[in-house]
Length: 265
Length: 169
Image 1 (spheres, chains in turn purple, green):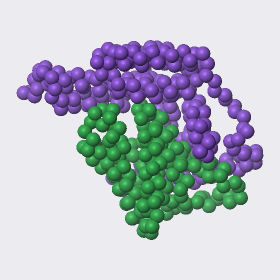
Image 2: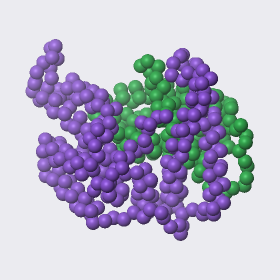
Image 3: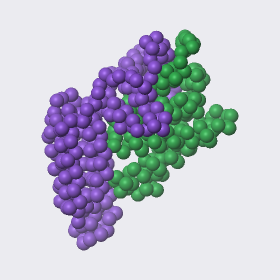
Image 4: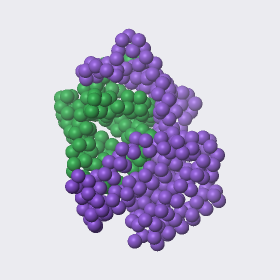
């Protein structure tokens, strides 16, 4: 079974970041992503780095989880840095490699872009590392609530997301079971020519689709039997609440943004 | 086996919702389990085949969009991938349905959809250009070609799956 696949990569905990209302986390991270593009000096990047570092420490999420999130994009960060070294021809010549001139502007630009991307990944990872997918779904439902006025099916959307999240592990197990059954009959998904591998995947996909449709119909039957009636007037199992700590985080973040604009060059 | 499903007269909306949810879950599973189908340097994303489902029934437009949103939450750059990927998928699927509405020939529908998706990769190229300052047109070309390849293999797959089960129901 593919144990690497944990939706959202949630790390259970009881840190201050874990206890924050998911709406606070989404809002702060959203604006962090926007304002990181405004950083343009050493000190403005330093401020955002300190904010990111303090957030990671406060979350008490082991650094290895953050590093795991960075693994697939290290190559991209290094590639971007090197690309800027080669392409940007601003400032003075810093040094030469095999008669290729590297400019100070290229180094600065490369570091700035790589740093921006690094900060984006670290801070955005914190949401999925400290919030369960169901909490994220609840937060999205609450945040989209104003759209109900224009008849946008917010509740239905949130419900569908919750059902999907609930059934992902079930379908994963099913996929595993079917692929093992196929493999025991000699099907090889990993090697061989393209045509053969496409052919091998079809007998895996067909039962998966059939199973998904069957489960959907059974679930609809169960919901109907229990008198499910949709959005209006339904109470909630989990209520979200903005607490004092959320307000404090908002104030702190506003201070960081104000500091960022003061430190811009 | 696939005909064993009952046809009881349950509320369409609940049934539609559960079907959308389950197909979205299936999208995530295929994205994760069969994440990359690699052939040396060439890598194909099998989950791209789900885009063709929107041609069979409009409910899949919502199912695939929901699947993309959930799957993109696994990405390290989810803050960009979730809103941009979700919106782009939704709009491109609607556009594909509109464009292919009058095309009767199924392989032709699949080919047109593949090309539309490849061209629509300007969203990913734009994202990379903004975040990483990469050259837009070159990135669009490379990402678009990769998408075209994935969609071609996905098209062949969904064509064969469609022969075995009724995807429009």
